Length: 304
Length: 173
Image 1: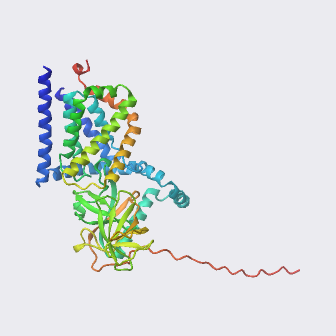
Image 2: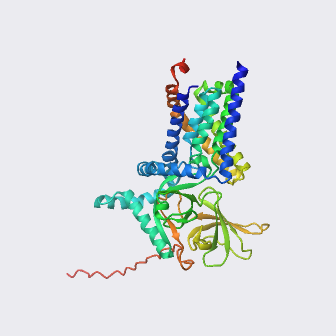
Image 3: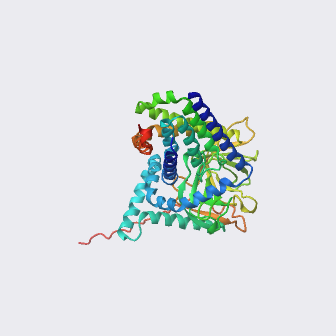
């Protein structure tokens, strides 16, 4: 009897393994089974994700706040003043204000670069068990979003659209280890490749053997043919450390991303590349320090 | 194992998958995320009988393959979790030793989650996927199991209770 049960288990195992391998083979042979099923699931989950996005966004941001506690401290002071101001006016809640500000900035960046964009809200993040760093946005085919379109935030590059459904799209973040983008050091002709490393830092490999990298150099996207997957001119990151290794053929450097991928709420998908390469015009310029000269006027001495 | 239980458990797993995709994935866990779905599936597999481990491993994998954030072939997670289900079923007595104490059970679930992620990566490599560097992935898997170890005790009693509800009278006896 036990042997019969064992045989049944073995038969079941073989059956299930064969079914799995059959599904994988179908997928790899180009039968669009997965695409249509996943697209259906994405369409079904899209409204739920939008609702969850509104409800759970404070919880979602809680842990990243803990992680960036030191940076947050300064921001908290600055934001407290702004929140007080908002509370006093009682016009808009802080979440809406934050998103509006991001939206304004992202549209401003797109306008300066001459990109035609579709704005979208981030409604979800990819599951941790997939080894892919992705976000889901609430704009899809119906809004003109397509595969391999560049996605930008208010400060620079976010990633590239990987798959699209009618009302949502999955964006592969630039922090994903498989992500690579051709870049140019702003102000020079030196080109290189920036690769994601799974965190907030990236690796720059300079292809130009004679080129020079300096700490603080800003990198911009070189752009691809027809603007897909990357439009030119989008700020990518800033060089933080130059790795000096005499034996290597290419020069490497550590780069910090321009966009904070953990806190993005609003993005824009570039649906049409600019007519002319914006070159370095999108690089964030440091604000000039305002110097105020105060000339004390002599106070008239009281006359007795 | 009754057909009704397969149905109920599948619905339960799908609901959990929905919670994972819609809610848990939104939480920015430091360093890396936590997969509620995988943790619960490992608990279910550990509590099932030989056939149950295999069947729910496969069904759980198929549900996981529905994830919109992955671009791996449909069926890869089904294959991985069927293998894990098989490992559970052939080591039923050993698994039983672990489930007796809550602490060892949680430890076991964390290890099982890591094992399934490693298997997923290995099969991915065999299928020619690029999932990043070894060190990076080792870190991700380690942190994921650490989160599993820390968070699983919170919902473990609930999952055990729900699973008991899904058993029919004959199976409960």
